[in-house]
Amino acid sequence: MYLDNKIITLNSAYATRLNGTFNSNVLFNFRNILSEDESFVRAYISVMNAQFPNSFYIISTSNNVFNYTYNTLTLRTITIPVGNYNATSLITEMESLLTLNTTPMTIAIDADTGKLTFTASVNFSIYQTPFSAVLGLFRETTISTLIDPVFSVLSVLTASYPLNLLGAKQILIKSTQLSISSFDSKTLGINDTLACIVNGVAPFGLVQYEMTNELNKNLLINPNISAVDIRITDENDNLYDFNNINWTMTLCLTVERSDEPRLAPTLIPIVKDLGDKKEVKDPVDEELKLLESGI
Image (cartoon, rainbow, N blue to C red; front, side, top):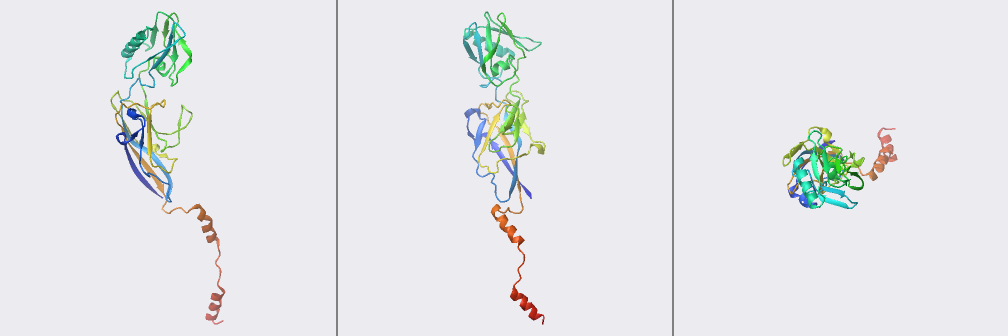
């Protein structure tokens, strides 16, 4: 048994982009990276290192929709422009959009609790969306629903939780072709995540990852690989928008190979039968041996 290591360097600049300038769903059209030949025993894949630009925004297309009602049951919507915000700039943007939508509100943040308070001249309600979770109105969620909104009392509504402008906390590298056995608490089942990287850098910085131990070497499910697909998502399975900026990573494909080629399954019974046969003595040879001995 011996190990056959192959280094695979990936640069999104040379990939086929499947989601345009988002640059987070790509395909590398390699040829015959791995095949289950006679010497193949098993294969492992690991992410040796990765470099991602933190060029994605805190408020993105996955969490920028605000659904609400204003003095009636008519649903209203504002869409926050994507970008990086702090509490002051986000409040200013929301108040401006609400006024343009003829539904003015004032929004204030409590310096001690970090919670937002919405005030209007009429009663209103706010529905559950990923953006309203950012505002602290609901538990963190990835869904939008038009049932069970939160209602204002005497035209005032204070969020239950602090404003959360931390943005995405993880960068997940996923691949269908390079699938391994990994699990996810969102689906409570198996998924195709190769590595999970902490995003701890400021906007427009560089997120860097380097493998430090063998625990990140994972058994490959698919023994025949040609093209390599890569998807980069956040912890809620939203594809990142890298805003056309490229990323790089290095993979290591480790193949365990046998020193002796494997026999085809159909040949195994034949070989076994041959091994079980007893030696048959030739009568002529036996007679010659007797004559030579002088008997």
